[in-house]
Image 1: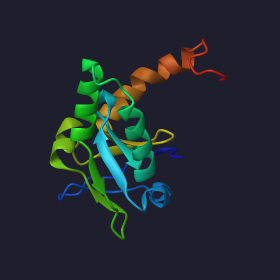
Image 2 (image 1 turned 90 degrees about the horizontal axis):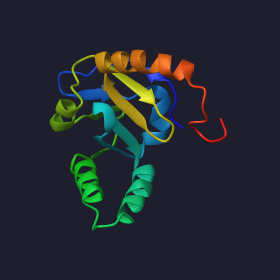
Image 3 (image 1 turned 45 degrees about the vertical axis):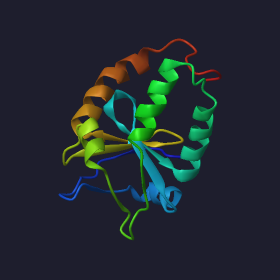
Image 4 (image 1 turned 60 degrees about the vertical axis):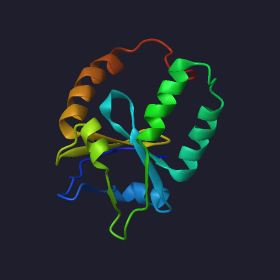
Length: 142
C-alpha cells in the first residue's frame, strides 16, 4: 500500500528518485500514466494489469469509455527503477502534469501520484477544509 507525502526533486534529465518506502513495491517495474486533476498515476505492473483487465470490460460502444481508455493508455510508460531508485518521467507526462523541479509524491493506496509541488499544495489547501467538514458517509464503512 502506498502511503504518505514526499517531496523529491526532478533532475535535469527528467528523473525522479522514488521514495524509499515505495521502492520494494515498484522494484520489478511500474507504469506511469496520466491521472485526474493533472497529476500522474504510478502503478506497480501487477496493479496496472488488474486495471487494464477492468478496462477491457468497458463497452466499446461507449464513446466516453473509448475516450478514457485512449487517453489513459496512450500516455502510459513502463519503467524499471535503476539501482538508486530513479525512474525517468517522459516529457509528455511532465508537460501534462506541469512538472518542474519541485514535486510532491503521495501515496494513494493502490497507486502513488506525482504532482507539481505547487499544484499539490493548492489542491490540498482546497480539499483539507472540505475533508474536515465532511459529515456524510462518502466512503462506505468509514
